[in-house]
Image (cartoon, rainbow, N blue to C red):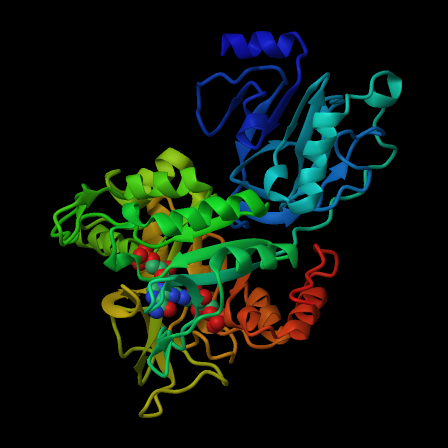
Length: 493
Ligand code: 1PR
C-alpha cells in the first residue's frame, strides 16, 4: 500500500481498471473495514439486487463529465463493464469524476486526478474503442489548466446498456485428431458418421471479433473425457485468441471436483489413469492462458445436487462450505468470472401438478408438445453432454447463485441447432428464480429470435450455428433492430 500511495502522491502515471479504480477510494462494501488507497473520497457500494441483475455485465454508454475528457473521447463509444460494486454519483462538486454510466442509476465510471486515470469499465476488453483509450493514455499527456478541470456544460446522459450478442464455438478433436469448431444437432455433432467441422477455432473466433461479436465463448465439449491440464492445444487456442481478440473470452470444459460426491466435500478429480487435478488448477490454467471467465457445466449440476442433498437451502442465500469448484473459483477470481453453462432438456408432464418436486411450466404455442400431447414440462439439468440428473433448472439456478456464480448460460438440448428459437419458458422461469444475468442459448435461427429472448428477460443472447452457417443478413438486421446504437455488428459481410 505505502509504495503505491507514495507513487500516486508523486503524480506519476497510473491507469487503474475496474477494481483498480475502486481501490483509489476510501473503502468498499466488498471488504468492510479494509481501507482503500484513499486518493479519492467516498465509499464504493454494491448495486442493489432488488431490481437489477448483478453483476452488471454489459456494453454501456460512457458520458464524459469534463470539457477535456482525455484519455476518453468527447463522444466516447460504449465500453465493456463487469462489476457488482460501483462508485455512486457524488452529491457535491467532484473534480475527479471524469465520466458516468448507467445501470439502474447513474454512477461514476471513470476518474482522473493529475496523471492518475482509472476506469470502471475494461478498455482492454472494449474492442477498438477501448484500445484507443489505452493508446491515448500511453501516447498522450493529461491536459492541464482550467479547461482540464472544467465540467462539461451538460454531460450527455449515458446510453442505456446494450445487451450482448455472444458467438459460441464448441470445440473438440475430430477423428483425425485436429481441434475443430463443431456444432451439434441436439448435441449430436456427427453427420454421416463424421464430426462436423466448421473451421479452426482461433481463426473463426477472430473473424467473429472483427465482425463485432460482443463476447466469444469456447466450450471444450469433450473435456469431461480428457485430462484437461495436458490439453495443450486447447490452452494454445486460448493463448492465441487472447493476443488477437479484445472482447471478453469465456472458456468452459473439464472443470470438476471429485467424481463420486457421496456428501458435501471438495478435493481433486482423479481420472482413469490415476492422475488428479483440482477445479482451481484447471481454472488457473484457463485464466493464465487468457480467459476472462470460465464456465462450469457438469460439475455445477453435481455441486448443486450435493448442496441440496446436504440439506442446504438456496434461500435466503446461506452459501456452501467453501469447497465446491464454484466457491473456490469465485473466491479467488470474483463471482463475475464464473459462468454456469447448463444443459437442460424438457421432461414432459400432463399437467402443472404432475411433478410435485419440480418447477413445471406450461409450454407456449410454438414449443413442441410431448409425444402424448403433454402441454407441460420441467427442465432436467443434464451432465456430460446430455446424461440426466433429477435437478431442475430453477433449483440449479438458485443453488449456484447461493454458491457464488456470476452468470448463467442457459442452453436447451431440445432447441440446440434447431434454428426454431430459444426456449422462452425456460428463460422466463430461471430469470424469475434468481438475480443472476442469464445468457439465452440454443435455437437462434432468425433475427426475431434474438429479440424474443431479450424481450423475455435474457441479459444476453448466444448463438453458434447461425454464425457458422453464415446466415449473414439476418444477424445484421437482428442486432441493428434490437439495439440500434451498439457496436455495429457486420458478421461475415
Ligand atoms: O461439463 O464443465 O466439462 O463443460 C462442457 C461444456 O460443453 C458444457 O458447457 C456443455 O454445454 C458443452 N457441451 C457438452 N456436449 C456438447 C455437445 O454439443 N455435444 N455443447 C456441448 C453445448 C451448446 C451451446 C451451443 C448452443 C447454441 N453446446 O454451446 O453453442 O446450443 O447453438 P445454436 O445457436 O446453433 O442453436 P463441462
